[in-house]
Length: 95
Length: 484
Image 1 (cartoon, rainbow over the protein chains, first blue to last red):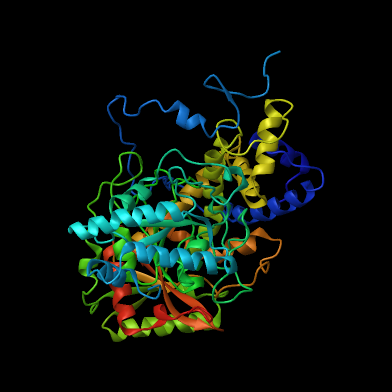
Image 2: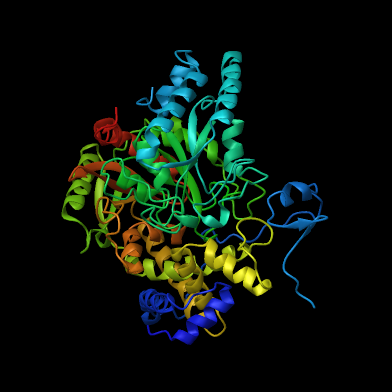
């Protein structure tokens, strides 16, 4: 399936992946080849077929709304790229 | 000691022929000296392993230790291990040290299993050759110019090279069975929901399933018994009794009805591979099984359906890697968008980026029904193929993959060529069925795998069949050249 360069740019924005100028035509070509593969599905008659999301048809289990985990902020933040006073730091968002 | 199976190691440990400490040191020494030639192990946990071995020796001395107590194994680097780097084969998680253990890791710890280290894999389990790993490709112990398969190529190669007697692995579209076939070992992907996915880094949540790899079916039975079971923490895990897989290995397979799908012997199948599989089927027939030709008419749709469903789920699962809470972060981000976009462009490899983009496309506004919805309907059709087949037969058998191990770089630039490597394995994941690969021959000095597909929760029967096959054949005992 033919996919346009501007569509790839939009996808890259949605997926939050920067694609540089040198590779965009390769990315477009290879994505097109995968979409050709998946487009085979369009020819199949699936009228009235129920979509399958779980092999066992199970439904989501529910549990009591109780606290089961202790706060482990220090352990979790030990692997964070940048923290301060228990907060995760990112570049300034609001001027 | 490294040529003994897990079952034999268990006997040796329990009869005090050798200690877990001796055994663990022996495998650590082998990893240190031999692994550079294979790149199968990417983290060695020598100190922890020797500590765990000392504890196991005490439990063994006290008596009543679980069967696997003191046996050393390797974990695929997709299972979170507390205080030990868990990279998932990605630059994104190269610096990630989990503060917790995956349930599978906990289960093995409970049973006294010793962890030697973590194995190499395709990045985020996306690949069939191990070439997408941030840590470089794994070398197939049978042929230095060939891939070991993927994504669990490190686990498979490590077992083939006798760096460990067993390992954990995961399978989303063939990632246990295909590398098991290409490396000449035995691997089992259980029924979806049999083994907890908690702490196993998610790729495609409705398809991912962890399972064991070892040299024999008997060993896989021991490992699966420890791995499997209900887990509150995994909402898709199924509460179903875990049988004693070892207890039924000796059952006769006389009268077993084996379905042989004609679609699994179509064009694209290597001649030598087909011949090896046919000989294996004849050997089972000689043991009293009956071969029945069946049809799984929607087999050809499994690859296209998979390449909608798996990337769609991956694009959602991998959105958590944003450079904020853990993992890689790009240098000097100018704003939040730049932080996300460059972190993900620099942290993910090409194949992972491609799948995220495909998934994003399939889930984007206006395309959801045409792609994801449609693929889920086709998935239902694929499942129905199996459901009707299992009315007449007990198991399905065919080749695990279309050909033996291929050369590095040989699938070229077209991602679809690589995707077709999983043509015989993907349908099982889509249906949620258990699948297994057992060594069944050699083509050009490279191993061939026989695939056994069972009905839901029929792992005990599959292991029984594989064990019976391994009682009368010797392929699982073959050792790659140069490995002593």
